[in-house]
Amino acid sequence: MSDSTHAASTLDAERGLTRAIGVLGLAAAIFNTTVGGGIFRLPGVVTELMGASAPWVYVICAVAIGLVVLTFAEAGSRVSMTGGPYAYVELVFGPYAGFMSGVLLWLLGTTAMASVSSAYAGFIGTLFPALSAGVPRALVLAVSFAFLAGVNLRGVRQGTQLIGLVSVAKLLPLLILVAVGAMAIAPANLSAEHAPAASTFARTATVLFFAFMGIESALVPSGEVKNPSRTVPRAIAIAMIGVTVLYISIQLVAQGVLGVDALAAAKAAPLAAVADRLMGSPGRLLLLIGAAISTFGYMSGMTLAMPRALYAFARDGFLPRPIAAVHPRFHTPWLAIVVQSATVCALAVVNEFEALAVLANLSALLLYAMCAVAAWELRRRHVQNEGTTPFNLPLGPTVHVLTCAVIVWMLTSITVEEWRAVGLVLVVATVLFLFRRKQA
Image (cartoon, rainbow, N blue to C red; front, side, top):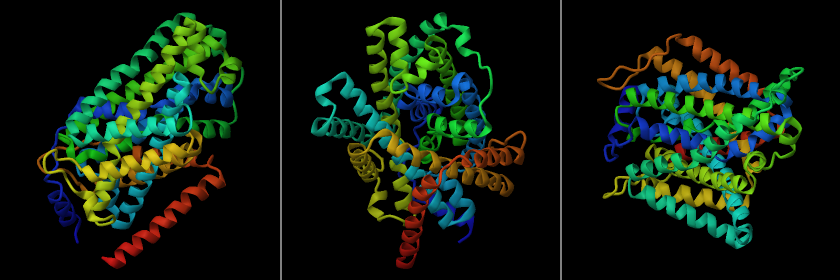
């Protein structure tokens, strides 16, 4: 089957979906799937690893994610099928590469969402100790996922409206912290006497990269985006510029107020410690509530995005066809939403944040590399949506090459155990792919 025939048949399968996501809706989805619970914890971790040089790691990550999102913007403006990165890679390199990128996307999104959901349950447990463990903790997660699944079952428009509301709510405590803390920064706390080794920069950037991930998941429902050639690049730019400015401001305030040693010592809840220093117990309570809202916002964004990956698998025959069912009234992939929500809820109940974050990081870097190469090839083949003008990177292939180079540099910090864990998942996925192909 030719690329054009395959793309046409895939688009025919998506006629039941409603294109209702605009620039602000998609930007809010990217923002929500990026700004999760990690930013409430990572400033302390980064400072422990980097000392006073910690803010520079944010700059490195901003450059890295900037290169990645440029390639995503180009690919997303050329391919509007549901599946996002999975669709980009499959269209260029065929079913096996597409399937493996889809597995990485699903693994990344599912483990990241489960880890942040576990953190969400922890924040709720801190606010209400009776819900901190055991059956009460599991019920908190189950009720939360049931609510989010129900909202998204009723329509993609309802899902994006919820995301927009949560975006405003979770930003407020962070903005208050930055505004109040900016006046209390001690410049000496931001002065670095010497730079850490390059290997330390690479490892810290890889850890911090978790806070910048999310765009790949937010682009999964591309089949429901209005005018993707215009919407995708603009939404990415709005969201990622805002995320980068927010993150660097938070690190500068946290480090400037507490100092390196105190911030590193408070790595379990560094922003709550900053708020306590600035505003006392009410400030700490505000940040804990903000953390719960932020993680819930992340969960809402991922509940919108990740079921579409299962939908895309089933649509292309890699999972049972019923998972690709579109609700006749609400026009949403309802069964995929139910299956994904139940899976993530189960993982969050039995795992902690840290245990799942490592798989998410490595999966993201591998997926980003595949998408950078796919974007290059889509450009070379002049693939584009009918009747639209795609977004073309000003420096052309140079951006794709730089993206791959930065990713390879970050991958040098991955441990053997981390490679083994993701490699096992990919081996199992390959066996599944071959089995399904044989049965087809």
